[in-house]
Length: 327
Image 1 (cartoon, rainbow, N blue to C red):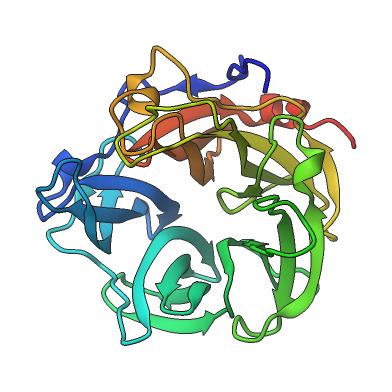
Image 2 (image 1 turned 60 degrees about the vertical axis):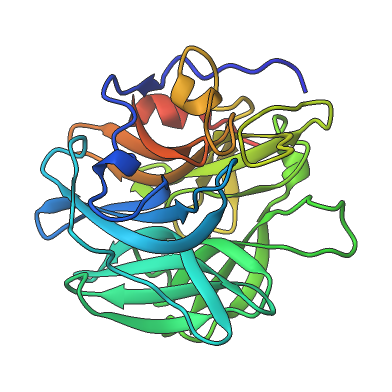
């Protein structure tokens, strides 16, 4: 792939990274891929917390979901214990949460590793103390995000199934399904194919839950380019992928229709931002997972950096909409 740089409309926050393992008062090595929302007068973050053993390089031995609150969306206070952990004889762990507030409740989409594949789950809470598990997909599906409103009386989610036949090894795409009750899902249809994103030669997928604008649902996506000549990108092993963030705009009433797409990436891992490029678990990874539209038009975009820490970037919503050109 050609050399890529971040868009000029996006600004990384000077406090980055805004959340890392050093902020967690229990066992923690990697803090990333978190869900964000405004809920009951505060900013809330549910983050993926991986902890490692003492081997060299370290090996991830467990995962739970931590909880943090903030008054300004920048400075975060982590609670004294994890808020969610899903483990049964079949389910090995839950991870990569995404938060959507709807009808006064907070819904969480997540991925679940099981003995028979990766499943996408949805749970709901009113207080982050107790959770109700609503549904789990069949394997393999992940990166699910809920829209914050029902469309035609039905709940809507974006998702990224992982087919192994009929496409390239990892040319995964963005799909949409809907539901009458958050339990039974169907009417699935393709939203965006990986071949439509110029800065991806591999898979794409949803990032954060979309936000409503007067022009459509603004959605941040992740896009992957792979180059097997790369080496030494992080301490996880032979990592050859780069994850970047892009944008798409969906029709308000028919959200399976893409009405605008950024032809260039919004946010690319790049120097001098060492927390994205140097010494992480998987370097050169930006994975957008939270997007909050403020009343003054500022958009906060939270992202996992190098699969190690959480960072924040901001932009004006009108600038982001201008990047979404008609297909």
